[in-house]
Length: 326
Image (cartoon, rainbow, N blue to C red):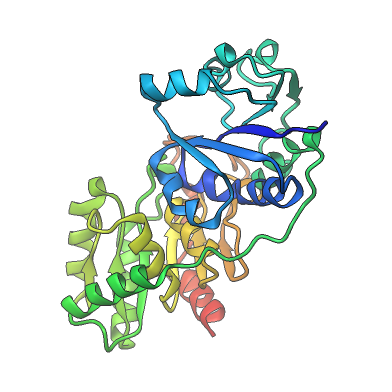
């Protein structure tokens, strides 16, 4: 079908958002004359620079923006989140073509309710690309997510303030909002960090504001040359720090996806989830995973001792870092 005005409801999480870039690039490239209006959380500010949409509305939406959208005449909507609420919210807009996955009992709200593959049957980015098929979109090459000059300067200024500018740096992401089943033991991050500082590298322990106390404690245990910046950087500055790092070592989290999208060397550690489904997209990514028979279980916590994470040794992750950074 031909769509001239398209509303795209973006994923909420940073990692999912970055895995939606192949679809967004395909929409922009194939439907060059279409007006694309995106709706999403503040994390989407990171990819606004790519010109993948013409207009933007934040989510959660305020009443003024909701009233504005209700007066627009969209030909099609593409709903990436699988939740019932994300499809229900679009109902008053009376969009004739409503595309999304047939999940959560919401098929009746969609004109094109696509069956979603089982988790891990195909990569999430491929699932998202399927949502573009009713609009005739064609796969296109996805560029690296580049840090802007001012973002690189901000990252450099931070390294100077920390007196780390003369040392190559590595980025650690020991957190994961999903839960403990995604978090490699912090003491193993510390051991790996000590190895890096002994080699003359600086270690930046990164994360969200809620990771601050843990990141600070970990950095202090790694010794001179390691510092915490958890909760101190914007997404844009974090992108620049990853893009210029010797390597980023992270759990399966938004940070890993951010580093990978920049094209920087990225080592990502998987626990209870499926790397076949959500491995970060990028040209220099190494996945470290030791899946037991119960994996992937997709659980946030585990009652049998997190065997999937315990099986991953410091030596193994260190070798992966050396290989990808070489």
